[in-house]
Figure (cartoon, rainbow, N blue to C red):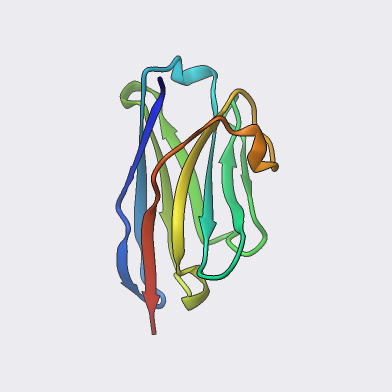
Length: 121
């Protein structure tokens, strides 16, 4: 069973930064696509960023230029560096794993429990 565990959430000031981490266990990590989703209160869960099996990255328009997804194969970690945070970035952030990159969350087979990010003005 693959297990994903997110960490790094918390309270940040508007304009500040946070780095989220996702620890991935029991997988041939190098062949997986990974993604970060987020769900704000009262809203649907939306794709934030993804990284393909070959390392290419994808971002939602709302975070382009501010967020960066990366992976550390040696340590089975995926990161989401979040800069220039805005109030609207407040959400629970989820890490997800799939066999290939997809913009459809149904294609991701493993999910973490989420980590909460709150951005205050």
